[in-house]
Image (cartoon, rainbow, N blue to C red; front, side):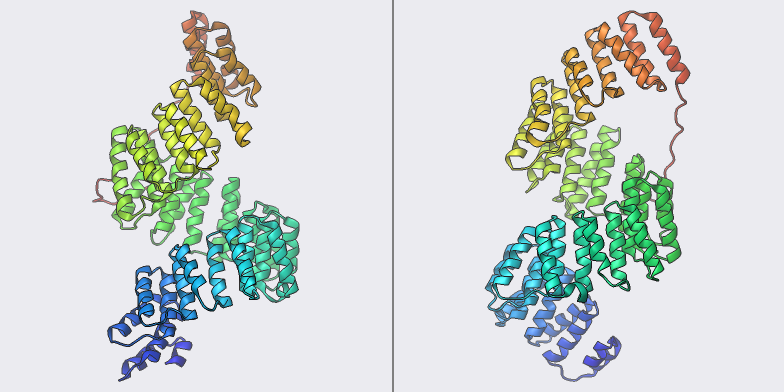
Length: 621
């Protein structure tokens, strides 16, 4: 049986197992560990269930394997049952079972319990330490990772190549340059830079993440050219950091050495195409992917996302249509692409299609659909559909997700349900900057400027640093509530307290706030002092304020600027004509309206849907 399992002959091993008249724990362990070794986790756990049901008492090897299966496959409830059985049978102090339990609770996210079990172990091997280090690396808790490494050295254990891979990768997440360089020195002393390709590639990734192109290339050049992993690593890290020429050079040299690029290289190129909005380069990469036959789901979803971010929604839909089977991984990027390109109703139709075809949905689906519903100009219908999606989030367990919670806060506030938005915000256990910003935006949208300031103070009191979007939301609240002095203080504190330089939107909001309050001279000075002194939005806002307060001299200057900055837009001339009409200059008003009529473009034809909902669909759309 053991020989059959090691050679992958599952059917032969199973046949022999079935023919046995008597089975003990060793026999069952061979089947359980054999299926686990080849990734058949469900079958392996099923054998364990049969073993227990037949009254066979587990051994330490059984528990070690079963707990590892539960941790890897996410069978946490079964893992807890196995833990209880291990304690009852007296295996609680076993080092191998203890290591598996630590791994299980780390996979469950219960770090405190895992560390408590880890500290209670009478003997901690290097493998056990690597389990803990891997978990902190995957959680991107770099400082705690390095702290655990120091504790490991106090235990007198020497790190191996796997240990260094976790440590170096962790340093790259938070750009711990000094710690990474020290680890590099240790790697060189142990000779792992030449003997362990995984460690050598980890050094390439580390220096790339820290932005050191010279050290990245040095680490790469030290790796033998026959290693295909290093070539793909170099291509992907250069692409991920925006170094297109270096990535293409490595890609070309890789092919000259006869090495085949991997999926990671193409994913890096597609991501770079999205960031640079270079759809032409993205199409070239698409051709390479097609020629090499990388028709896997991950690549197809990235292609859909790339075309959507570049604004080529037709190609994005074409890739989606060509996918043999519609899955969640392909529907989500198409949904975000449709939203980004302004096809809001198609987003809602796509959600209906996903429900009808039992594709399912996740937190990304719900968040994007809620944002789409918030943009629909049907307040009552939007509120109703937001409630339906809220129910879906509760039933599927995604209500506690930060992105979904923020989208719900935004959706309810847009339909006037600010009380529900506040209730959802209060239910978030640990709100982050994005969550606070969503709540501030919801209050601002409903004209509750003073409440915006209260939430901002609460956010800063929790040690969170507001970003530019947060400040813009608070300024909007001040603008809608006429809080001039508070707006001034906020605008000045952006730079002085948090080092955030105001953007065009912040200046525009302040100009509108000053103009609404009748402080027209101050608003004009603010425009002149800003880097965007020729921004049409600010001058249009100024023109509206001049109409409101009948300031003819300043209004003429504003009207002149609006017409000069956007002479091809009919709305610019319409705004100017309204101003001249209220000032009594009917001749000038007539001239502006004639020019506006001459430059008015035809209205767009009705849009067509990219999504075809099958007949018999329910009433989602």
